[in-house]
Image 1 (spheres, each protein chain N blue to C red):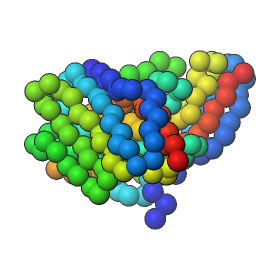
Image 2 (image 1 turned 90 degrees about the vertical axis):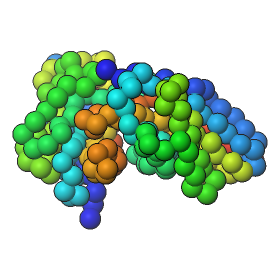
Image 3 (image 1 turned 120 degrees about the vertical axis):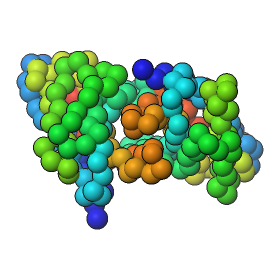
Image 4 (image 1 turned 45 degrees about the vertical axis):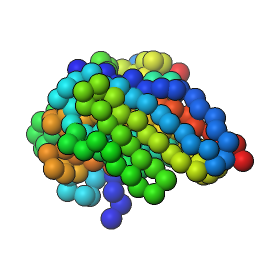
Length: 114
Length: 111
């Protein structure tokens, strides 16, 4: 039982390049999330998916796209990377408990855009 | 959308003393309030949570209180130990399971 797995753990991009962050969970959770973490800014929600086939924007969606490929996988794509997207990205999945949820995070992906 | 504010941003305490971190939220629909601990270079991990139908919850040295009327909730750590040093995040979640986080508190416990 691996929990939430993200790849890659580290990536360096040049401005304008594209890339996809992959996330998979093996806990049979319906909801999945992508957050970015910047110093002093906490964890900011980029996109989330309440269930397979649905996605919604969070607080900071500009410059990103997502795909909920199936119940297990939720990917985050940067089409044209910018230095402002340098950050640590966390994927999470949510266990539904009593009409709320508990989040389980992946290990994070550190992205640097030059 | 939800706005979660967290204070203080940094906190230093002597080992054995108590630490208190406070958060406020804006969305009255929020009904679940977890606290996460993040050690350097690691993922955030849940340490305690509270639901909107409960005013207080305790787990050993950690307690959380919730005031729904004032829309604020707090984390209390008693008898702090050096291994409590980390960044702590509060969060608020609504019935749609959208989680919004505070900006974090860096806690240092001085031996």
